[in-house]
Length: 197
Image 1 (tube, helix red, strand yellow):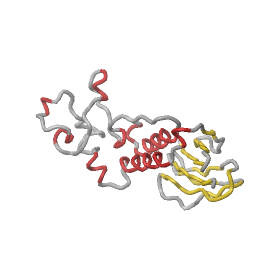
Image 2 (cartoon, one colour):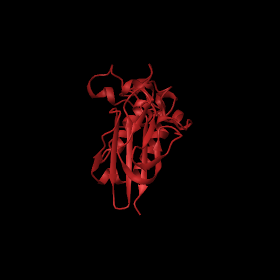
Image 3 (cartoon, helix red, strand yellow):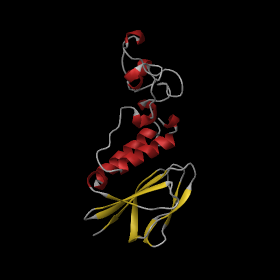
Image 4 (tube, one colour):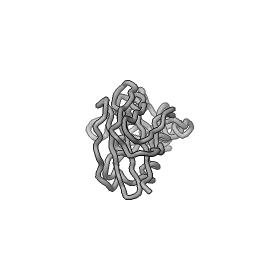
């Protein structure tokens, strides 16, 4: 997916989880697992989950020749390189980033249950969604550009917006009002909330 570019894959997950409704992921998406396009039909996307760098990706102790579909064993998506065990050891891995997104989405339920306001932003490569419940507002931004940008936000409610989720540590914060600006890295995302009570 997305040529294995972890930043773009993380951005895709951030957008998926920012949209309304129930997000659906396929196993392996959370680690950036690739498909085996040399296999026919649906088997290309049904390779075993890559649990570790052990034989058969840690999926089975059977002899490799006995597996109905073999794990991806060569190329950039090979199981020796991309697997859950390796991802768990690296705090900034795609797996940890997606886990943090899911935890944030679990706590901030507005995207799953409420309509959103689509914000008009400059530059237009930035997607902005604003959700409002009775108790808080949730702002979700995603930079679909390969360049870092400064986003000019439309007038937002006054007050401090607490960061929920970010693709990296940013130096600026968000204070509502007129002419608020925020930095976003290339393929970056930031989520904020503001209490209404």
